[in-house]
Image 1: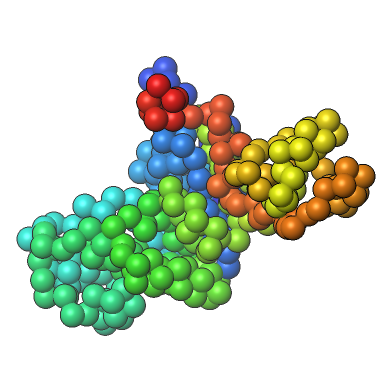
Image 2: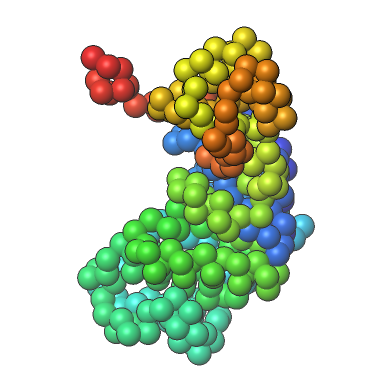
Amino acid sequence: MIEVDHLTKYFGDRLALDDVSFRVESGKVTGFLGPNGAGKTTTMRLILGLDRPTSGMALIDGRALQDYTDPLCQVGALLDAKFAHPRRTAFNHLVTVATTHGIPTSRVREVLSQAGLEAVAAERVGKFSLGMTQRLGIATALLGSPRALILDEPINGLDVDGVRWFRGLCRDLADSGVAVFLSSHLMSEVELVADRVIVLGRGRVLQDAPLGHFRRGTSTFEVITEQAVEFVGALSERGAAVTIIDERTCTVTGLSAKEIGVLALKTGTVLEGLEETSRSLEDSYRELTDDHVEYRAGESSAASGS
């Protein structure tokens, strides 16, 4: 288990992390989300002992990572895809890391197979695509059969098969008791593998909850009727938030399905469709982080209508 306890980090006068606390449980996949500049990579570096916190601590099963004599067997990590010497082969890179950490070289063959890199083990890393480099980074993180895994944007560069492989790997590792902690900007992928999600914004934890929590909230319904224009007025009068999709379709938030049905009956509106739309992780994420985005793109002329 990874425990982050009241971590605070200043870089000069800039506050990067502000009293951050959370746990990454063994046997679970925990997603770590946040806008650019939120402090995700800083948090991961502090857990790994690559930076010193201003205050607070990060523990792996009750001890700081630097207190272990076999750190690679405790935590495997991928923070930078360009970590390996480009003139080394994939096999030699893994052998070097294994030897340095007292890991049997037989383990190298195992992780090459696990990462789907056996066929390119003798190729130089400098010739690898980004996806192959990511696979090598994940293989390196797995070398010590660690109890926890920390992965920063591990899906970057992976093709469709690679992403599918990574999903299965995450679930298999969690099912075997590993604490998997991963950050990604691809929320749809996090939603497919995560058991729990932590959202960071401007150095603070905005939400830390099971995935299902992010899918709950005020229900939104899609309403289909030939009388959509007239019905929108009635819905709005009842205090519902209504968005018109087309001449026959609108979405309604703030009323239950029963209330919408009763209102349709009272107004003589024939409903051809009434369906609750699912709330996604991305919907909740946008609501949480809307006021915590440090780097926001300007509105395009198309979006602004100019």
